[in-house]
Amino acid sequence: METMLLIRPAFAHAAEIAGYRQECLDAGSRMDGCGPLRRMEDPLEWINYCKAWEGEHQPDGSDWVRATQFLYIRPTDGKMVGTIQVRHTFNAFLAAYGGNIGYSVRPSERRKGYATRMLRDTLPFCRQIGLDRVLISCRPDNIGSRKTILANGGVYESTVWVPDRQEALERYWIDLTIPQKSEKCD
Image 1 (cartoon, rainbow, N blue to C red):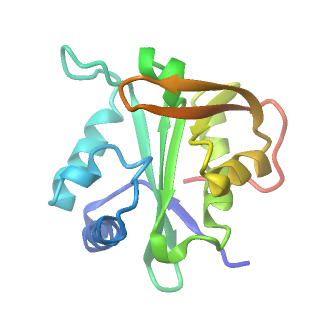
Image 2 (cartoon, rainbow, N blue to C red):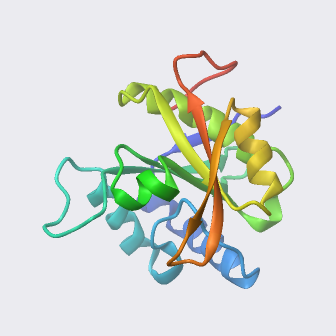
């Protein structure tokens, strides 16, 4: 199994970010764990956005929380196969529905185990920022995401209805006090 890189977005990744975005748009795919990448055509704008939300203080009047964005890069060819976002705390929406972590995998790279590995590789960072457990949600019809969460120790809590989105979400908790098999982050 090849080693993957879990890294923060940087200007050097602009072309890969643009390609990832376009592939997701062309496939009509959701881009969970990407923040506003769907609406930001310029990858540099998105990179700056990600850097701004890592800070201790969020813009006045914002309901957003501190978050760290990662890219999942395959070093053999430099391809960005996924994105994953860690929210350090909750706002009302995240506490009720969204959770600490959102992620997605490039459509052409799905069903290859990248989501499971990406989530596993992100859990040590969650511990580093002081989280004892993380909440992750997925739609009931997203079997791949459910399998990813369960493979990383997720325990089902409940299914909730999100009125604004008119969709149900399954909520899972991963206990970070239980060591995982192989962990890394940079």
